[in-house]
Amino acid sequence: MVKPREALLSLEFTPFLPYQNEQSRGWIWLLAGFNEFERILGVTASIEQKVREFLSEVRDGQDYTKASVDIDFEEAGLDSLDTASLLLAVQEAYNVDISDDDASDLTTIRKLVDYIAART
Image (cartoon, rainbow, N blue to C red; front, side, top):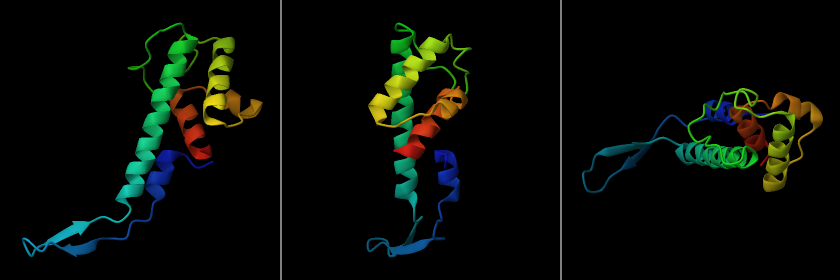
């Protein structure tokens, strides 16, 4: 499983591509691969936002917008039934299957976001 943060670090950037600006006749340097970088960040941010919304629904409206992405679900007040409800909502929303083995490892927002991003 490739995590989004690992994917960002493993992108192969072409050192620099020169682009001549006709107005200034100077050189503007563009980093190849920047669009892919933005795409990955956008995908993980939208998944994270949705996971936080699911958390709020599972916990009857409790606000998780400022919770750390590394907070353990148990520390956030979720019991095993809440966690199962969260994972079910994620499976339905993103059309991913989460095995029981994987579910036991998905204990934080970050781990869940990385798992979804790697499979969508």
